[in-house]
Length: 193
Ligand SMILES: Nc1ncnc2c1ncn2[C@@H]1O[C@H](COP(=O)(O)OP(=O)(O)OP(=O)(O)O)[C@@H](O)[C@H]1O
Image 1: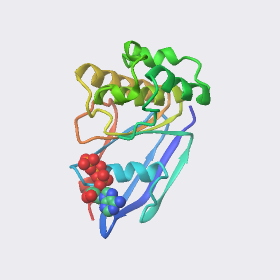
Image 2: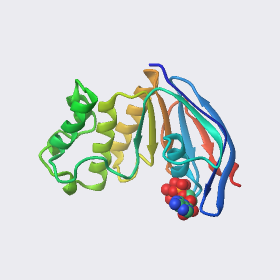
Image 3: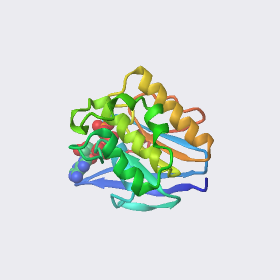
Image 4: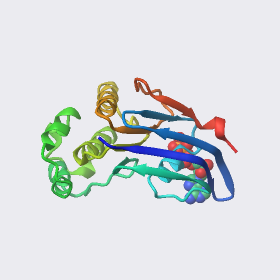
């Protein structure tokens, strides 16, 4: 899996506040990065900068390989049953093994449930299934453990580990502990402006 994600001397401003500055890293295939820090420090802002959804105040991002973002916005049709909502994107993404993500994320029993009725943790698992189905090498995960129980947390940690073992890159913003073997942790407080 060819992938690279590098940030050079990034700074982020939201409104009138400079949140962080001087942030650099270089993720090679197989690497995981945990972005840690308190509420409001700028973790989601950093993820959005990496995804190209927010312009950095300074610095630049270089990437090689497709990116998949999972955050608190669920990009699935709320009115469709989960199976159909995922199926729409499986066709677009050319996913050839949709059963794998449903199985790994314990979603099989929920396929007939309209997306809007899913619980917080079930919605998060559905978003992760969509990410898995895309097969993209760079994962940007913003608080992926929010709403997950212990079993689902362990599943997500295992999925990230497998993704990196296969040469993928994962950047995980989380104020919670997350077990990511071999991951580098960046505490955004150390870059606070
Ligand atoms: N559009 C905006 N305009 C001005 N300020 C903003 C905007 N969006 C976010 N902020 C502020 O930027 C700061 C960082 O927000 P961000 O969501 O990146 O933090 P976070 O570390 O992800 O927090 P949390 O752990 O609560 O998710 C916060 O103080 C927030 O209020």
